[in-house]
Image (cartoon, rainbow, N blue to C red; front, side, top):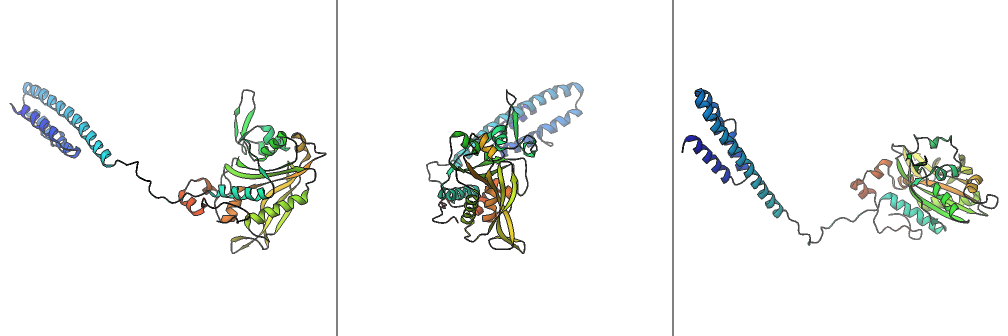
Length: 358
């Protein structure tokens, strides 16, 4: 056996004898590296005459091809063996009991909705729901919002592409469309609350593109503004668990109510700290008013016979005020550390009888 064949046999034997990928890499470097045996012989071809150089070059390239092929095959074998070994070593026995984990936490939005629903349930309200994707009539027209109103503009509302009939659906900007659907579904009286997601084009510390509202609707033959004020005063005092929480109602404007009002609750802002209750300041908490006769008429309710009130409040805003959450955006960042801090135990069932706190 001449020198070239001996080199081929030696290198092939070393490749076959490599026990793992690291040993195989050493063989590759020893054979084909910058100072490898085969590389050095390639460099020495320049010292031969032309004919000898051609003949030796062909033989050395053939050896190089054989070595490269053998290296690839052996690498695949050793890689598969290493993977099988790892899979065997890291195998999980799925029959074992799960590792003990901390109990899950209820999101503050869910908790606050449950608290508010519990309060309203004690007042005789029932829960109504409706679609997140609405049409223009239920979201705007039936609520006495005229075509030129800014809320209809694209910079405030998420519009969907036009349908075959040219109508453009939208993501509801408030839960008020459910009030319209409730009145369309049957005759008064109504006493419902509407919790749900709403959507508007906005994003900062106090606004997000998706947020939650709870709206209320009371329609009968006798309800008036005094009932509205009493209902909402009881609501905020029960929710914030402050029996002497001051409240006031300021005249305002909403297209779907007349008269309309903003409700404020008493607070103090000493040393930059907001504290609800007695104090010299006021904080807006919700909007409300007597349902506009045109809204009743568009919903199929006789405004000469029936009247009532409506109101709406933001769930996230209530949660931030009650539980000291400073940034609205954190509600939707899916941070488990945040949820462990602000979340609630699954055993915290809200009730006016047992209290609403954690």
